Length: 401
Ligand code: CTP
Image 1: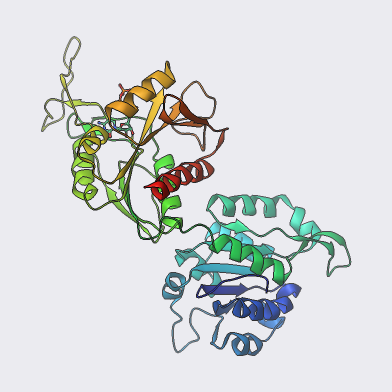
Image 2 (image 1 turned 135 degrees about the horizontal axis):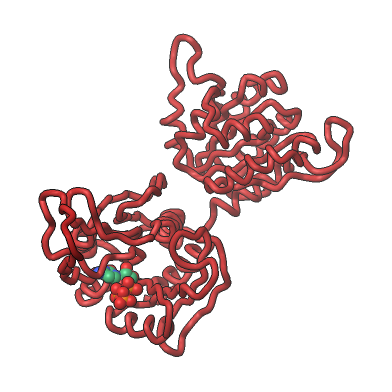
């Protein structure tokens, strides 16, 4: 057997490539690995392999159209049902539609509704595979978090030899098993994550804010969710969000809103990650009307906000509490001081002196500090991989408790 997918619900999507004939043995192998399988085919896939073959093997009707004229196939329900969606084989056309949200097939409509991990096994001729359009679409799909199953190298249907063949069904099942067996080491845990900036209103049109995008905090929330946790994401004003089924987002604006939201959830959580860039000061008063320009300078008196991490550190019982420090100088000294003062279990240090680290980047370079003598240094990575490193440390901490 090439894998174990016991009780995993999988949508297998088949598109119009000659490799579609391999979808029959892929279905059989998925079922042998104990997965529950539902099949979606594009109309052109049906020219390569009969839906009857797939419905017989999967023991369920095959979906080809969103509507068959009389009834409607609920792609949203199917997308929510699945633990994973796999497109094998995936043609260049379907890649392009998925990358650009062109939902003219049941397949792409389901893809856009799916909350589960999506894996793509491309299949096409060498020239199509190496075309910049294909590469751009793959890059886009990877940036959406979809997994690309490496293509094979060998003889192609056109007679050419090279890259572009769909991965073998056995290899696809092994790949999926590894991905889906991914650590569930936070199963049953409740995690709160603060993320993004806060906005402190001056008047109805102006605020004091900062450049945090929320990217790092959202990546941590999603990684905890991938590993089985129920995550409550307390998110300051951000253009980003999470669609993960295990992440519930609470949108907040000011430091005070974030504080109230965090303390309301803290008692019932196991892990709290303070990734937000919270304003330390807020205007003493907020004007009800727009502040008018006058001659001369303007001073606005500010008052301190509540320190969410420090407060949670002072009341924590069994919870693991993680903080962040973004520093420009005396980094280790400052981070260590925050670790102690806020009673954190560890602190993640980013230095603005490291290229590619901090706000507004897709990458980050961190150090994890547990004490002055326990400091782990990590290389520059994209924020999704940094999130994995941070959550690995959280899970290790959790295990020791
Ligand atoms: N933090 C918080 N509430 C605040 C300020 C900070 O929860 N009002 C949290 C941040 O989310 C982060 C940690 O405390 O996890 C450190 O934040 P940082 O801004 O680096 O430190 P400050 O304590 O605000 O100190 P300073 O701005 O002077 O460096």
